[in-house]
Length: 179
Image 1 (cartoon, rainbow, N blue to C red):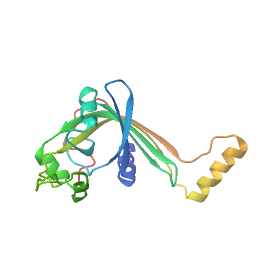
Image 2 (cartoon, rainbow, N blue to C red):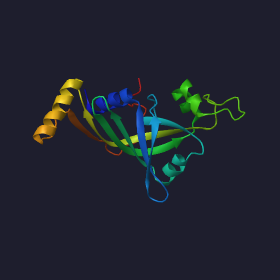
Image 3 (tube, helix red, strand yellow):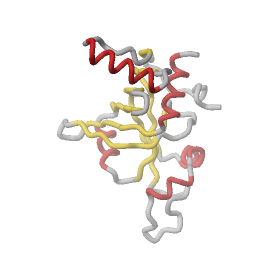
Image 4 (cartoon, helix red, strand yellow):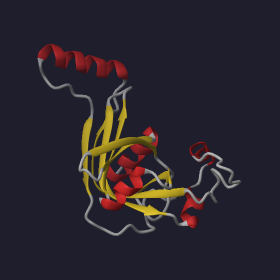
Protein backbone atom coordinates (compact mmCIF):
# COMPACT_ATOMS: atom_id res chain seq x y z
CA UNK A 1 0.00 0.00 0.00
CA UNK A 2 1.40 3.38 -0.97
CA UNK A 3 2.10 6.09 1.60
CA UNK A 4 -0.52 8.30 -0.07
CA UNK A 5 -3.20 5.59 0.15
CA UNK A 6 -2.29 4.95 3.80
CA UNK A 7 -2.55 8.70 4.51
CA UNK A 8 -6.05 8.92 2.99
CA UNK A 9 -7.20 5.85 4.95
CA UNK A 10 -5.99 7.37 8.23
CA UNK A 11 -7.65 10.73 7.46
CA UNK A 12 -10.94 9.06 6.50
CA UNK A 13 -10.86 7.01 9.68
CA UNK A 14 -10.28 10.00 12.00
CA UNK A 15 -12.61 12.35 10.10
CA UNK A 16 -12.05 15.57 12.10
CA UNK A 17 -9.16 17.96 11.54
CA UNK A 18 -7.86 21.09 13.14
CA UNK A 19 -7.35 23.50 10.24
CA UNK A 20 -4.78 26.25 10.81
CA UNK A 21 -4.82 29.48 8.82
CA UNK A 22 -2.95 32.78 9.19
CA UNK A 23 -4.90 35.82 10.38
CA UNK A 24 -4.34 39.28 8.86
CA UNK A 25 -2.20 40.24 11.89
CA UNK A 26 0.12 37.28 11.20
CA UNK A 27 -1.05 35.09 14.08
CA UNK A 28 -2.12 31.50 13.45
CA UNK A 29 -5.67 30.35 14.09
CA UNK A 30 -6.98 26.77 14.30
CA UNK A 31 -10.49 25.41 14.30
CA UNK A 32 -12.12 21.99 14.07
CA UNK A 33 -13.36 21.00 10.63
CA UNK A 34 -15.09 17.81 9.45
CA UNK A 35 -13.47 16.13 6.47
CA UNK A 36 -15.72 15.48 3.49
CA UNK A 37 -15.83 12.60 1.03
CA UNK A 38 -13.46 12.47 -1.92
CA UNK A 39 -14.29 14.31 -5.12
CA UNK A 40 -12.34 15.61 -8.11
CA UNK A 41 -10.82 19.07 -7.88
CA UNK A 42 -8.86 18.79 -4.62
CA UNK A 43 -7.05 16.20 -2.53
CA UNK A 44 -9.21 16.95 0.53
CA UNK A 45 -12.47 18.84 0.99
CA UNK A 46 -13.99 20.87 3.83
CA UNK A 47 -17.26 22.83 3.99
CA UNK A 48 -18.01 26.17 5.61
CA UNK A 49 -20.49 29.02 5.35
CA UNK A 50 -20.13 32.30 3.52
CA UNK A 51 -18.88 35.18 5.66
CA UNK A 52 -16.61 33.26 8.04
CA UNK A 53 -13.18 34.61 9.00
CA UNK A 54 -11.47 31.52 7.60
CA UNK A 55 -12.51 32.52 4.09
CA UNK A 56 -10.83 35.93 4.41
CA UNK A 57 -7.73 34.28 5.90
CA UNK A 58 -7.48 31.76 3.06
CA UNK A 59 -8.02 34.48 0.44
CA UNK A 60 -5.11 36.45 1.95
CA UNK A 61 -2.82 33.42 2.45
CA UNK A 62 -3.88 30.03 1.04
CA UNK A 63 -1.24 28.04 2.99
CA UNK A 64 -3.00 25.84 5.55
CA UNK A 65 -2.22 22.98 7.88
CA UNK A 66 -4.59 20.18 8.81
CA UNK A 67 -3.76 18.19 11.93
CA UNK A 68 -5.45 15.02 13.14
CA UNK A 69 -5.06 13.06 16.38
CA UNK A 70 -6.49 9.80 17.70
CA UNK A 71 -6.08 9.63 21.47
CA UNK A 72 -6.88 5.91 21.70
CA UNK A 73 -3.58 4.91 20.06
CA UNK A 74 -1.59 8.18 19.78
CA UNK A 75 -1.79 8.26 15.97
CA UNK A 76 -1.35 11.70 14.46
CA UNK A 77 -1.27 13.30 11.03
CA UNK A 78 -0.02 16.70 9.86
CA UNK A 79 -0.90 17.83 6.34
CA UNK A 80 0.26 21.09 4.77
CA UNK A 81 -1.03 22.42 1.50
CA UNK A 82 -2.79 25.15 -0.39
CA UNK A 83 -6.47 25.90 0.05
CA UNK A 84 -8.78 27.13 -2.69
CA UNK A 85 -12.35 28.29 -2.26
CA UNK A 86 -15.16 26.93 -4.40
CA UNK A 87 -18.75 27.99 -4.72
CA UNK A 88 -19.28 25.65 -7.68
CA UNK A 89 -22.83 24.27 -7.36
CA UNK A 90 -21.99 21.00 -9.16
CA UNK A 91 -19.14 20.24 -6.75
CA UNK A 92 -21.30 21.19 -3.77
CA UNK A 93 -24.02 18.82 -5.08
CA UNK A 94 -21.44 16.02 -5.47
CA UNK A 95 -20.08 16.45 -1.94
CA UNK A 96 -23.30 17.36 -0.12
CA UNK A 97 -24.23 15.43 3.04
CA UNK A 98 -27.51 15.94 4.95
CA UNK A 99 -25.67 16.59 8.23
CA UNK A 100 -24.43 19.90 6.79
CA UNK A 101 -27.85 21.38 7.60
CA UNK A 102 -26.93 21.72 11.29
CA UNK A 103 -24.38 24.40 10.35
CA UNK A 104 -26.77 26.45 8.22
CA UNK A 105 -29.64 27.82 10.29
CA UNK A 106 -32.92 28.69 8.61
CA UNK A 107 -32.80 32.50 8.48
CA UNK A 108 -36.12 32.45 6.57
CA UNK A 109 -34.70 30.70 3.49
CA UNK A 110 -36.28 27.35 2.52
CA UNK A 111 -32.93 26.28 1.00
CA UNK A 112 -31.20 26.39 4.42
CA UNK A 113 -28.80 23.51 4.85
CA UNK A 114 -29.63 21.90 1.50
CA UNK A 115 -27.23 21.49 -1.40
CA UNK A 116 -28.87 24.60 -2.90
CA UNK A 117 -28.05 26.83 0.10
CA UNK A 118 -26.13 29.80 -1.38
CA UNK A 119 -24.15 30.21 1.86
CA UNK A 120 -22.25 26.93 1.35
CA UNK A 121 -18.59 27.38 0.42
CA UNK A 122 -16.16 24.52 -0.15
CA UNK A 123 -12.51 24.60 0.84
CA UNK A 124 -10.38 22.37 -1.36
CA UNK A 125 -6.92 21.41 -0.10
CA UNK A 126 -4.10 20.44 -2.44
CA UNK A 127 -1.68 18.43 -0.30
CA UNK A 128 1.97 19.45 -0.62
CA UNK A 129 3.45 17.53 2.31
CA UNK A 130 2.31 15.25 5.10
CA UNK A 131 3.76 13.35 8.01
CA UNK A 132 1.98 10.79 10.12
CA UNK A 133 2.52 8.15 12.75
CA UNK A 134 0.74 4.91 11.86
CA UNK A 135 0.07 2.79 14.92
CA UNK A 136 -0.96 -0.82 14.48
CA UNK A 137 -0.26 -2.12 17.99
CA UNK A 138 -3.05 -2.85 20.48
CA UNK A 139 -3.52 -0.44 23.39
CA UNK A 140 -1.83 -2.68 26.02
CA UNK A 141 1.35 -2.79 23.89
CA UNK A 142 1.27 1.00 23.51
CA UNK A 143 0.86 1.46 27.27
CA UNK A 144 3.78 -0.93 27.88
CA UNK A 145 5.97 0.99 25.39
CA UNK A 146 5.12 4.33 27.05
CA UNK A 147 5.82 2.95 30.54
CA UNK A 148 9.09 1.40 29.34
CA UNK A 149 10.12 4.73 27.78
CA UNK A 150 9.27 6.64 30.96
CA UNK A 151 11.20 4.18 33.17
CA UNK A 152 14.24 3.84 30.92
CA UNK A 153 14.38 7.37 29.52
CA UNK A 154 14.20 6.03 25.96
CA UNK A 155 11.77 7.00 23.24
CA UNK A 156 8.81 4.59 23.08
CA UNK A 157 8.26 2.65 19.86
CA UNK A 158 4.64 3.49 19.17
CA UNK A 159 4.40 3.02 15.42
CA UNK A 160 5.84 3.72 12.01
CA UNK A 161 6.56 7.27 10.81
CA UNK A 162 5.62 8.17 7.25
CA UNK A 163 6.42 11.28 5.23
CA UNK A 164 4.98 12.39 1.95
CA UNK A 165 6.27 15.24 -0.19
CA UNK A 166 4.13 15.93 -3.23
CA UNK A 167 5.65 17.77 -6.16
CA UNK A 168 3.81 20.97 -6.97
CA UNK A 169 1.16 19.74 -9.31
CA UNK A 170 -2.26 20.64 -10.58
CA UNK A 171 -5.08 18.61 -9.05
CA UNK A 172 -6.54 16.26 -11.63
CA UNK A 173 -9.70 14.18 -11.76
CA UNK A 174 -7.59 11.02 -11.41
CA UNK A 175 -7.37 11.64 -7.65
CA UNK A 176 -6.73 8.25 -5.99
CA UNK A 177 -9.48 9.02 -3.45
CA UNK A 178 -12.23 9.22 -6.09
CA UNK A 179 -13.88 5.88 -6.70
